[in-house]
Length: 209
Image (cartoon, rainbow, N blue to C red; front, side, top):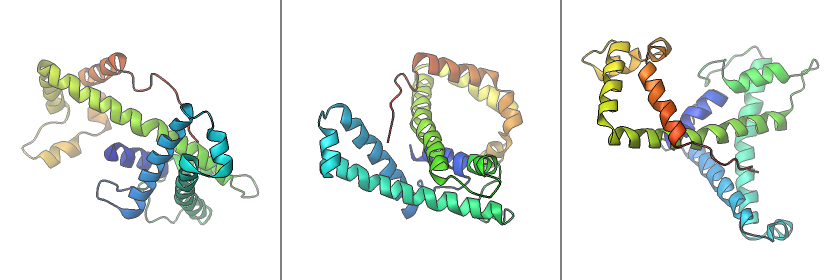
């Protein structure tokens, strides 16, 4: 879960959240996002959640605090990226300028330079929520299926060795698995697709906060 959170956040925002290494700020944001999702789901079993929200008690009070943490973190990143772009893109902590947030800012910034921060926050959070748990679930089922079918695992291993031009060093092999190599791995793609057919990552769409 932490690995997929870091990956989707890098794609969406262009910053390594670094929850795997225990980054305090990143871990706090990730925990708040998970808690907010959990508290939101409790609304399905609590018929009086609107009353709790009005009185600001119980899970609704906790949800409001978690949303404040999420908003503070996201707005800080969005405003920082918007300032970088308006100043000519002088960034130091970005992975690349083709991250989704940068593209959204460039596409939605008005002629007068105004930026709709809430709209950007909503779009980025939707992408993070859509990609984090679904990717983790798909990978978990994929590994489960590989354990059940070692012959498929062997074929994928052989395909990866050919596509990545296998070397004796695991680091060199990992670096060789670029986009070009992955595009050649048709059997891996088929195995992942079949896993998703058997175990869909999102059989039910739930709306969050």
